[in-house]
Image (cartoon, rainbow, N blue to C red):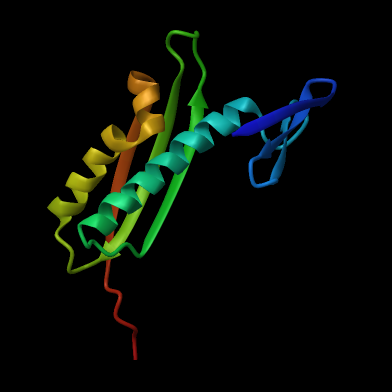
Length: 131
């Protein structure tokens, strides 16, 4: 649960059920548009990591960039580009399959539907330490 209390002007303080607070609105770091993009990116990350763990795919890194693409109410979209880093020994097809299933399994992505544009890149690196 999130509680939102108006502070002044066009901003407020959001509080989670654990007591964590966040300033939101105008003239603060987190606008509603930022939060929507963050929500989509975070849910995609969490979903991907859950699916990868369930299939025993080791993940060495995950980064994403997200933004709200301006447009009319009926055409605005959230764009998320993510990069997944896995060890070189993992099958690229398996990771690509996980990436393609992530949006369908993500609750936030499902709610956004066609308004979400998600692209995943896969990077495979040798995770052996160099001598």
